[in-house]
Image (cartoon, rainbow, N blue to C red; front, side):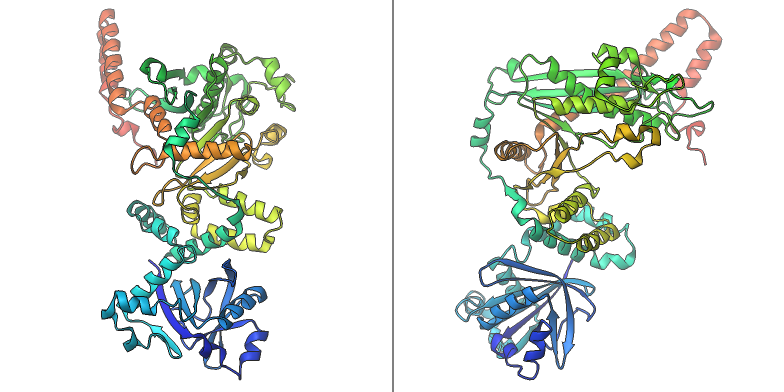
Length: 602
């Protein structure tokens, strides 16, 4: 993990440099002694300290300069003035550096004689013998004895957990986080390994200081929360795909969407929970190949399955809410509320067929409905609007969802992407909090070290904290083919936030159709937080996990279905009395997905 360097200095000594005092003040240089430990002169430094009013000050563009025989921290004028004022009013200052030689955080801790930790440490741990190490310092003392350094660091950190980012340290030291972290670090260039954790913490500290007024907190109170939702149903949705495992080489051909609904406080088990399972055959949903004009083409099977699942999950949510006699108070989807959908068209390279018109009619979606809701539809070869193209149908469903009175939220776990971090940075620039140059610097660090949202906001947020929601665009016009760009431009923009439910768990992203008022938002976040704390060591809404298990088809069940299907096929063949057909079917069923003929082509 991070290296640490600790220095203790008498403030009077740092102030008594008459030869350089004026120069230091003019250049905004804060003296820290004649050593900088493991740091290098060209290290990228973040300086943190408390001002006289107790406010947290962070100087992100600090550097180290050597003036005469002293090392100094160069900061901006405002930060320097605040640090100089604290130095004037203090008896001791501790300089704590942690990170790597290239990038580190330098923490300044100012104390009066009455509040300095020396006396308490002497009483609690007399074996340390602080006086033997020139503590309290007469001038400047480099604390390098491991027991003394550890004791002092622990004492300083406990006195100001936020200043020392203890939340981020606790998060990063959790065993399952460490496993993920080191797995990720091994994918980076070797030269970036050492600086990864220090860079992650520096960026998290910087963003937290910028977002402090946007951070909200949920207090843990199960009784109050469940009383607020007493007697009101909550629905959870998730989807799964199925294949016939006895037929080697086959792709998933079925999609199941499960909806689990529970009413907190209901004691009648028949009324407390309900299940709704919708099953779809892929070939019955997306099969209108008349939209594809290429003479020779091959549909991208993976994209076809994605398009079907992305359409069917929100469609099932829409049908569930519209058909419910008693509307749920809330419906949660496992995954994004809206997916990036600009590539699922009938053109090269995906060649996705259109949605089957009979299927659309069966779920109550008519041609005139889509044409009325979606403008600028492209035309086919005969000049007719391509109203049943996947993009048009998906946009129609999205618009219908955004118009519902029942709140919807998509819950995305383990978001390794940087979509939310970049949206946050854009919002900070738009409101004038930071200049574009600062955004570029942070974005460059995020890109170079591949810092995903889950790790960044895992360090940034504390337990029960979430950010005020902000728009997170998912579908961009320029990513679509020319003929579909006017349609893609019509996608509504979801609103998203991040919430962290336990100190040692990854946060997750929550996407909503619109920004709720503050009270409704707090209730929603409180519900998500408390549902995520129902099971130990889980930290994810438990209702979604139930829907996930309900919709997914486990291997043991798929094998059982396949075995029964195999028996039925063989029975039918035996009834024909055709020995040649029986031999061919037996050979087909005897093949394995690992057979030579089903190995990937070079």
